[in-house]
Length: 258
Ligand SMILES: NC(=O)c1ccc[n+]([C@@H]2O[C@H](COP(=O)([O-])OP(=O)(O)OC[C@H]3O[C@@H](n4cnc5c(N)ncnc54)[C@H](OP(=O)(O)O)[C@@H]3O)[C@@H](O)[C@H]2O)c1
Image 1 (cartoon, helix red, strand yellow):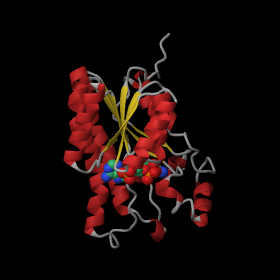
Image 2: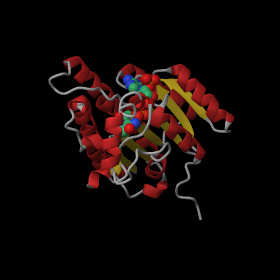
Image 3: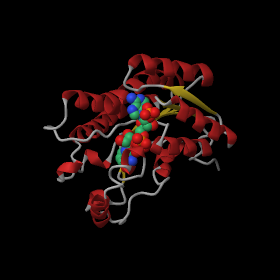
């Protein structure tokens, strides 16, 4: 029997792959057999990861891209199509976690969060979906967050633009899913809770009080371990999820159910 989680012959595009969850996902997709196009702004980090993946026998290309900039996105998608000829999987992972309540946030900071976390997904999808439609096949996974539905009353942890942006990702996922299932394109969102990364290590992980509260609240009594998102991402990017679309799957140790 074929392995329904197999990504062999698939081309996967991963945004925000220069660090954290995106870099980790690129390795998981490559291990599942996909050719991976890794995108972010820091090209030197992407080049190092591409070399690492190639040394493991995988096919990888590093493409510099600012997901909030339409010209940059259009050029990146053209480059991937030029090199790989198609795009089967799009992992919209690039994101920023801007701190601040509505009173503290400048309008520019608000816009920047929305530009990367929401407009970035819209732009990537705008340029990738036509190529998926051409092949009547596509798997889009949008990284939201548990913070789309859970917040914190501690003023030091207020991230109102982040909450709003990650909830918008859920809505965008629902709309796209309804439109594109007829093209055999599934669109799902994933809501991780706490993983260690550049985004969280110097802030949340460095805050003993926060970590104590998080561990006390979370049924898992710990943050996620490296790699614990990848099973869900590979599942939603493979034929194993062919009849699953428009869903928001939390990878949160059960945090959202209590
Ligand atoms: N870590 C967690 O606990 C957690 C929990 C829930 C959700 N998330 C979400 O998971 C995703 C990945 O976050 P992470 O934790 O892995 O943090 P990270 O290590 O800071 O990674 C963020 C990635 O996004 C990229 N990025 C930022 N702005 C970009 C832009 N304008 N264009 C292209 N790429 C851009 C960064 O690359 P460059 O700077 O090189 O562009 C980097 O590769 C984010 O959407 C985040 O909101 C994380």
